Amino acid sequence: MTSDKKNPYFQVDGVPKIKKSVVVFADILGFKDETLRASDEKRADELLFKLSNTLEQAYIHLKHNNPDPRRWAIKTFSDNILVGFPISEDGGNEMIEAFFHFGILQWEMVRSGFFIRGGIAIGELFIDDDIVYGKGLIEAYEAEKMAHYPCIMLHRSAIDYLEFALPDWNKMLSDDLLRDMDYGTIFLNYLKVTVLLSEPLGKIYYDILLEHKKIIESKLEKFEDHPLTWSKYAWVANYHNYFCDQYEYFDESYKINLKKLNYPTIISKLAN
Image: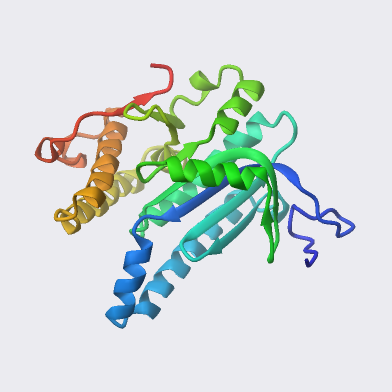
């Protein structure tokens, strides 16, 4: 175990310390099959470069919006991503800040074609170069396994903590968190981050929505003969359209034709 002054899970004297944290554990949808396919097609290095570059861009955003390296720690292995964001005992505002950073990470992955599913938990965590450990990791992993679609959903521990730190959280975060009506799960509204990053609403934001639409449509076309995988991207298409419907700026040209998909509306705000 090596001490790192930039790692928030070490004290200033170099002693490792488990800390209560916002924890996200995520994996990349279909990455195993894509890795095998890339190897067979002799483009394994190309896929590695794409993933490495995407994660680097996500880290740049994380560092730009939160330059203090002792506020968070991140670890990647295979197709898994783990982020720890230590919080104080009553850190409701820190939790909201963490949601923002996780949204940036998710969007940067999506725009490179890497759709992720994951879980957010509140619990004990320790991360360094050699060890990832703690109840928060286990609960975030459990939530990730419960995420039926490409989204980052909240574990019960995260919901309980919100109720403790922010009693009106379901109203305060009604635009940052959404509810999947099929399973009742609450997930991170990562497209909301693009609103925050491009205020006042400008051309870049409109371009982002069209980019998101194009990426989803390409996935739907690619997996039209694979119903299980296709249905996951159909869910994302539904989320995309729901998001567009929340703003008067976006006409039908920004939306995906869900009638053709025969897919019902399943997203709602928390307060509903």
